Length: 172
Picture 1 (cartoon, one colour):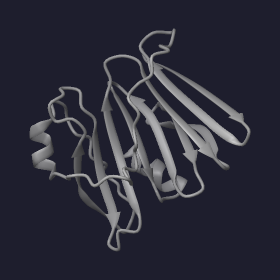
Picture 2 (cartoon, rainbow, N blue to C red):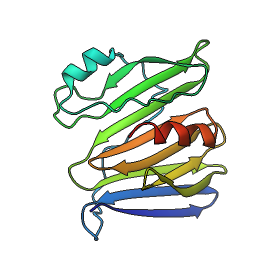
Picture 3 (cartoon, helix red, strand yellow):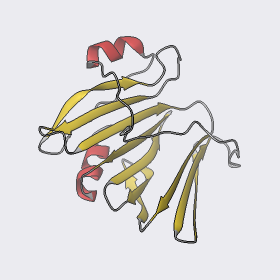
Picture 4 (cartoon, one colour):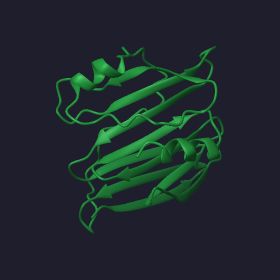
């Protein structure tokens, strides 16, 4: 059974959200690898679904629902040499102004994510196909993080809460 611990603190106008998943009731204090779900600072080589499927050792969970106007761009594989590498499924609008990224991370143990945000955010827990998910509404995007079986999923992009929930529910 998986357990999720969520800690939110605000100090001097900076909000920090830490999410830890674990197979034990006691969560690990060991930090995981930092993840940049929007990938906005680096150029990434995107692969087709067929190419990516041949390179990873687990099924790629493509959402069956994608908000109107978004098109599949490709899949980025974080570390093709690693058996437990994470992937990012990229979508964008025709003018490429809006991006949407679904990150799929295989988990074999405790996993941690941390956000430090200056400015206002809204954070809440919702249910996605029977699993608790954390929905974070930033000023310029929304993000959802949840665990299903042996994967952590993160959806991040310029869409509204209803759309991100529909997309999340279509992944499993």
